[in-house]
Length: 159
Image (cartoon, one colour):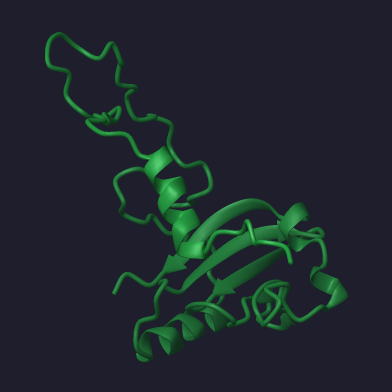
C-alpha cells in the first residue's frame, strides 16, 4: 500500500501565501509625494491644436451659410424646430458632391438615418445610420464621405 504525498488544498494555499508574503513591505506609487526634493517629472501641457473636423468657427457661435437657401430647406428647418430638440442637435450641411450641390441632414442619435438631398429637395439616399451605421446601402451614396467637398454649415438647432 502506497502512502499519499499530496497535501490538501488549504495546506497548499497556506504554504504558498506564507512563502510569498513578506513583512514590513512599503509600497510607493508614482503619485506619492517624495519626502524631500522633487520627482524630476516634468508636466506636459495640454495640446493646443484645435479640432479640424468641427464646422463651427471659433467662439462657439455657429455662423450659418444662408447663401441661396432653397424654400424647401427653410420649410424643413421649420419642421425640425417644431419637434422636440434632439441630442445631438440636428444640423444641415451643404456640400458639393458628384458635381452638384447637396444638403446633408443629421438627426438625433444612434440608429437614425442621415439624409442626403439634392438642391431641389429630392431625397438621394441615407449615407449613414441604421443598425450597421452604413446607411441604407444605396449605391448613390457609397462614396459620399470620401468625395464630398466645399463643406458649409447651413443650420444647426441651437435649442
